[in-house]
Length: 609
Image 1 (cartoon, rainbow, N blue to C red):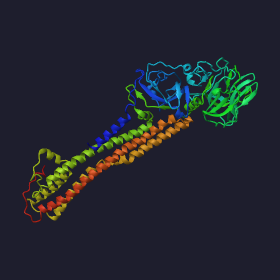
Image 2 (cartoon, helix red, strand yellow; image 1 turned 90 degrees about the vertical axis):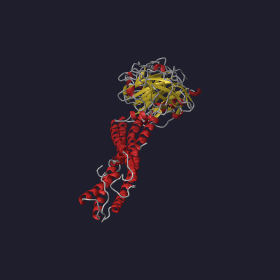
Image 3 (spheres, rainbow, N blue to C red; image 1 turned 135 degrees about the vertical axis):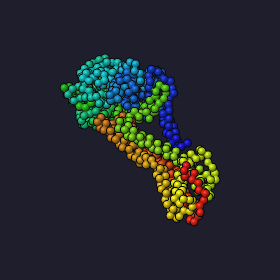
Image 4 (cartoon, rainbow, N blue to C red; image 1 turned 45 degrees about the vertical axis):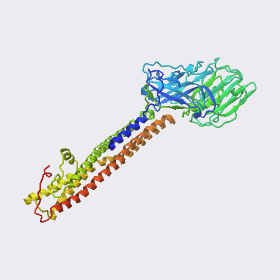
C-alpha cells in the first residue's frame, strides 16, 4: 500500500472512531429527529445528601444544541426521563433563535448526591405544538415565581407568576433583556414592584418559609430594602446594610436582625436566600450563594399583607438600585442542599448539568466533533478552507511523487540487471539478454535508461561523423560524460518537482492554523466584552472551534512531514544510483572504445528506439 493510501485510511479510521454512535437505546418518539442526554450531578455542584424534587435551569446555546434543527419558538422541546419513556414537567422561560439562547426550567424528582440523574432533551419536530405548563413544574408549596422574562410578555408589564398561585405583580417592571436568566428587573431606587395580598402569600406565625432571588447591586455599600412584607407591627425585611445582606423580623417582642455578614460586591450576581423553619427550628437562616452566612432568632410573625420588592423610600426605607432576577417564595423550608444546588445551577457557570453529544434518530452521533463544528465561525472556515486546499495539493504531490518514485525504482532495477550483462557492445542493451515488449515499455520509466540513451546518442553521433565505428578520444569521452551529467541534472529536477508543496504544507500549515485560532479567540473574547459577563458553557465551544484551526494546520503539516521525509529518502536513493551509473557508464565506454581501436560491430537499435 502506498503512503498516500495509508494516510487516507488512517485519517478515515480516526474520524470514524470519533463519529461512532454513542447510544443505541430506545427512541421516545420517532416524530422527533434529535435528542441530547443531560446529566444532573448534584455532587459536582457541591451538594451532599438528598435534595428531593427540584426544578433545574437548562441553559441552551449553540455550544450544546444546534438551534437550526429546532423550531423557532422552541415549541418542539421535550424533556424525557432516563427510561426514555416518562415525560418530565418543564416550561420555557425564553427561547431566542436569533441569538441562539434558551432558558428552560425542568422538574427533576428525587435528586441526591452520589446518584446523578440522567434525562433527555428531544427536539426537531416541525409539527410539534408548544408544550410546558409553568404551574405544573413547581410543587404545591411554591407561592410565587417571578422570572422577569420578556419572552412571557413582561416587558413593560407587571411580572407574571409562573407558579400555580398566580400572584402576578401590580406594577410594570423595567426589564433588562441581558439579565442573568433570560431577563431581570431593574430598580432605580424610586419605584417598587409589589403583589396584592392573597391566601397563598399569607404567612402563619411560626410557619416555614423560603425566600430566594438573584441580586446584582448597582453600587457597593448601599443600604436598601430588597423585600418587605409588613402588617401592623409585624414585618419581614430582607435587604442590604452598607452592602451587607441581612434578614429582619418584627413582632410584638420587637425587631431582630441577623448578624452582619460579608458585604456583597457590586456589579456581580449573587444568590440570596432566607429559610425559616428548617430542621424543626423556628429561626431564620440567611444564605449567600448557597452558603449559610447568618441567622435571625425567632419565628416568623403572622403576615397577611401585600409584598414589596425593591421597596421605595415612601415607606420609610431606602430604595434598591440594581437588578433582581428569579424571585421565588415557598411555604416550605428548603434544605441547604436544595439552595446550594440552585445557586450552582442557575448562576453564570452551571456546575450541575453536563451535556452529552447530540444524537440523530438513527442513533448516530457526531459526538464532540459535531459540537465543535457547529461553533466554527466564518473566519475559521476560511482558514480551514485554505488549509484544505494546501492539504489537497500536498496529497496530490504525495500520490504522484510516490507513484513516480516507485515506477522509477522498478525500472532502474530492470535496467541495472540488463546493463550488467553488457560485455562488448555498449550500444546494444539486448545483445546478451533480449527483453519482451512489457519490459521495453517499463524501461521508459527508468532515469538510468534515459541517461544511458543520451550517452549512446553522443557515441553514435561521433561514430557517424568519423564515418565508421572506432575509438573515442579523451575529449570525446569528457563531452559524452557532460551530456550524461546534464541528463542526470534534469532527472534530479524531475525528481524534486513538487516537493516544495510539501515544505509549504509543513512550515506554513501550522502558522496559518495558528492565525485562525488567534482570530477566533479574539472574536470570542470580544463577544464576552460585549456581553459584559463570562459564561464558560457559552464560550467553551467558541474557543474549541478556534482551536480547530490549529488542529487543521497540524493535520496538514504532520502527514506532509512524514511523506516528505519518506519521499526524500527514496529520491536520494535514486540520485545515488544515477551518480554511480555516470561513473560506471564512462568507465565502460573508455574500456570498450579505447584510443586506436579499429572499432566494433556497432548496432544502433537502442539509440533509435
